Length: 624
Ligand code: PLP
Image 1 (spheres, rainbow, N blue to C red):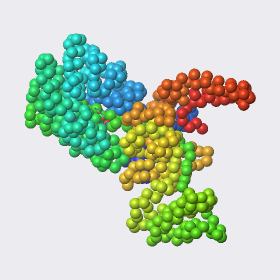
Image 2: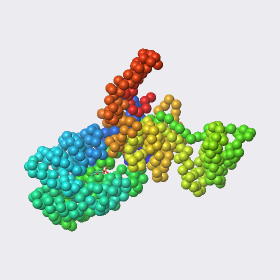
Image 3: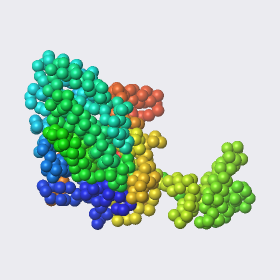
Image 4: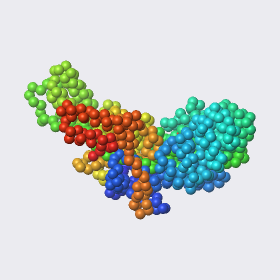
């Protein structure tokens, strides 16, 4: 458990059982129950759902909605804040139908709404939210058709806000409002000068591509006054960036937003809603620090900071407390999904068997290498490393020039590997080591080939060097003896995971177990519920994985409430404009010609056509 930091990043949702299996602990009807993930995997197998699979635990999604709303409710109550909290989930963070439906269903107890950044997302929000006290917040560029939809929602009594990203949107909103005779609810998104730490810090500051500058805000106020519509301006919106690791940044951002809010009241806008955007982080690393993959605060602290900052700013001014809105995305959905996959193969970097001594007449360079192997000790590791690499490269050079044989080159590489292996064994005892020796364990680590595509299922690892917790989901009572990096199924050198969180910070290898014959070895990548599914792409034409949603009952049994079989090969081919039927016909003609030319029999033709057809319907991933 220590090795993988599950106690830290798993909050109380994930842990390890006495049987050495990862368990998820959830609430079901007010009762805490734990289920081993491997048991769910067995249930998937029985239902024909092979690896890789995205597993969603519905209870965890509900628990996160509850935790966020309860934490705000309690901060509001304790501070005697005179208004309430309204959360909205940004659809872009996970647009999958089941996720949105569950947020709308369960979130309805808390009037949890939705944030839409496009027409498609507004259509989702309008059709899924049944509770008309829940907010719909429209961000992003809005054309007349987008605005019309939002105005119709207004007419039906849905609190649907248009948040202005640019002054150019206002004339469209005013014109459509006049044409349809429906008054809009308007918000303004401000560019805050407060900068935040972390990866997404470009969402804040003067150069942020989103939001109105102070000057543009004044233009908007003038236009609203001229149109006699200033009373529609009721929301101030700001978003400092996603995954804000440092609570101090949040406090200063809220304070700046409050000053804008105050300024808008002074200009005569009625206001009433303060939307602080997203940013509530997830501790992917479990380090509780202000590193990019972590956070130096807890959920309660986040809520208390927001509530108190608003109060401290507004109370002396006699400004009524606004409705607090946040657009937490990742903090709501990250925990509920994990990617599960099996390991297909391992390539180790162990040296092959070496002879006791070299044959008479072996090349001098090989003899030299061999004597280095015999002399490796703690006090000469750097020297032996240098010599070993030098002699190996000399042999490679001879091979290049045709002066060494294939066998001589293989022997040189093998002896070098044996030397590096011994050096790596001695490294933990060495007092000071050079950078190149520091990298040695990674260089010698095993490559575990996983049945998944990084580009399809974990795109942020490739695009942003994101760290997600990765670990085996079983065999955790056995010591994992191998140091490994994980490669995916694409033949792309970027398709690998070689950064892992550990109690000592980020490391380049992960401890894993040796594979056993005729037994699957399953790994899980955790906290992947935010952004990964739709950002993924079809690199090498690996399609969507299977997706399973499970609800855990209070007696520990579980139901497969949703199951989606991933893309077939025909599906992904049609995404890139192929016509599977036509491809089948083309292949039929090729086979028929081969029969005509006597290269295959008709029976063979039939077998080949069947294989072609079955493959089209099959999975894009490795099938056992
Ligand atoms: N709101 C807006 C306007 C955003 O751009 C984002 C994402 O960057 C979010 C909310 C969600 O942020 P997070 O996932 O950090 O909560």
